[in-house]
Length: 96
Image (cartoon, rainbow, N blue to C red; front, side):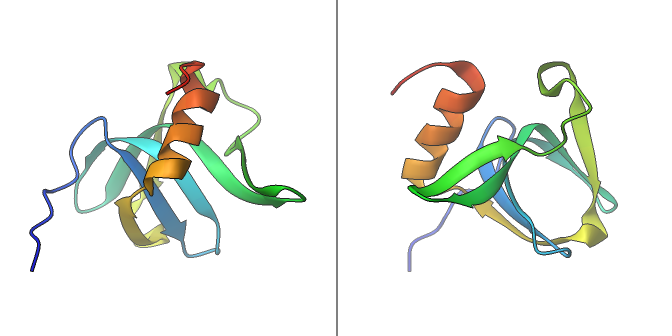
């Protein structure tokens, strides 16, 4: 059995929320009540496949840390490599 290292600050993570939304974000921290994220993006279905859209349109994602109640999160895991690269390109402009 492979041991996976714990999620740490700066990792790209995917979260499934109680409402059914799936988001990808940069992990900041978590405690018993809150998961803190940076630059969350919603995963959306497009004609060409999966895409990313802002999680919230009314705030500046670059200058905000998003606190999501821990009880609203169904699960959280590291994002698959291909989507993590797409997320990095979308949020930073860096092409890997």
